[in-house]
Length: 430
Image (cartoon, rainbow, N blue to C red; front, side):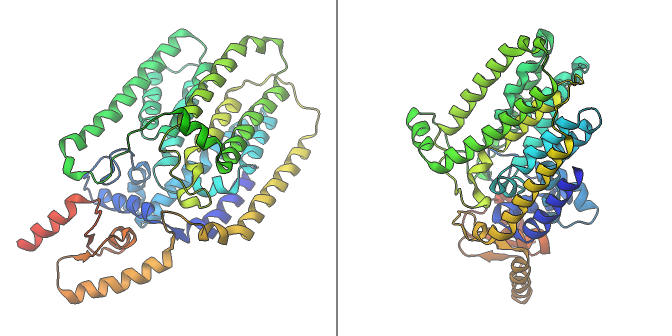
């Protein structure tokens, strides 16, 4: 089963993520490059007061080891996507082969649109993976110490504050077994969210650094009804919900037919109600409509990344009872191979359509960035100027050439690194 995860990763990374990128990924890479040089200018994405650059933070050691910043942040995003699935399948493999197979089948049944969008370095998937890890530790049958419980819950609160879709995993907390663990988790969640909000004070004290604030959110029934009439929303949300809930239910039914499970009925009901409320809030707001469903570079699926990982939490926490399904395990493995073939076949046949789909973030190849930045570097050296100014807006050149090839570039419009122009001007005056 781990071989299927490895095959999936090799094909997707070599055939898509190593070739194609977009401006937002280059912003993350540029921030990793600056931080690797010991310069920390903003806690959030440059000039954006709402999303933490988790990949940039975690990529710094890889940049120190010699990886270029773009490769480093892509590596962090890929590991954040694959490791929760592969490690859970591995942990469950010995004692609970059907649960491990359920994890693998759930992963391979995910839509290709989801798997392409998930591993993009944007701060989304890494924040979700960290929150998932915190929840998994909180839900372990053996309770960690009180400080550890507060710490893991604080990690969850810190990560889920960064992007609203992350909170879709929080209904898993209904499976905490007693009041004390509930109280400790609640205290940790509040602490983590408070830390996230404290970081946001940077932009209160430095308003000149902000070029794009998160829009004010409005939750209205009209937004909910309107978005649910969109076929793309219904297919994406409905499909992921069926996969996530169905996988969890099948594994539980296979491994636990004990009447004692009826005692958990209230937890399932409360968790389902909480999930329904969070989905209604997510779909029923003004931000949700801003997507390009056909393109992985700005996809509707970015709003739903946590849903399959919610099912992963449920599968991973359920204790084994020695009850096995009557269907031979090899039948499930054969189904996994078929699903892997279908998804990889869709990738090979349909990749061009994903690249050509309309999007607000135009994709570009790494090779093209290299060629254009090489020409820009020649122009800069001939000019004798301390830095290059791009007229208008071109995020690819402004962030990519600087992060990957050391060309000092700023753009005249929508320059997120508000501090960079002042530095260049000061250096030129000396």
